[in-house]
Image (cartoon, rainbow, N blue to C red):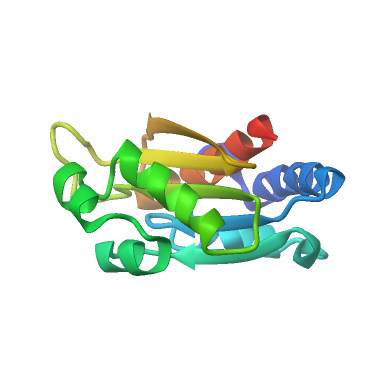
Length: 164
């Protein structure tokens, strides 16, 4: 595992995120698939996070993505869960279905199975919504399932910091 992605390193990222959210008086909602709530866990591990963390959605199945976040079933069928449009709709849904003005969404293939030539294991799509400005990014991470998920958590949080 990459040394810079220890639990302590993730906690430092959350501390920086917390400062930015508090300074701007914004709250955060997370929408997670392949990370299974790990982003929300990192956020709520920080004492005082109730001042800026609004809620987390763990939407591992396509059904959950549709029911909880409003991701269009047709989009899931046509583009697949691991796609830019799904990450975008997850991020938008987390904001529209919460009291938060900021969200981060993650959908990917952590492995060890489930990859394809177009979407290899390690492919993760990210969506961020900051006060109605939506943006996305895709990464392909190396390593085992935990490595991919840990890198996805760090990238999601750092991406949010950069957008704030």
